[in-house]
Amino acid sequence: MANRFVKIEREGTLNGSEIWVDRETGVNYFFHFSGSAAGLTPLLNADGTPVVTPLGPEN
Image (cartoon, rainbow, N blue to C red; front, top):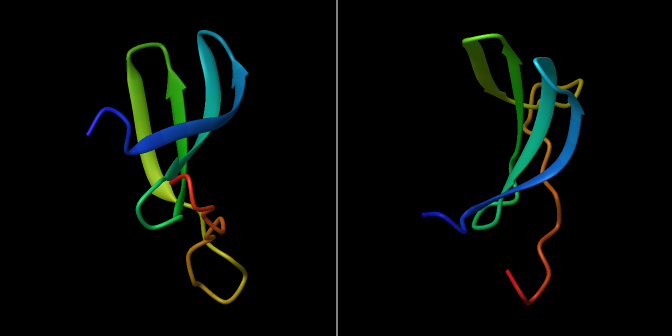
């Protein structure tokens, strides 16, 4: 499971946001953290479908 997700973007240090991609499905997730609190949710397109990154043969 350690290699299933890859972080593709990060902003902030103590308070910030990250975008993670599931290497098996290509689904993108938004992770926000603030101190000891955090939340994770799938990123959605305007039509409500998940944002999916096309996966290459190395995934």
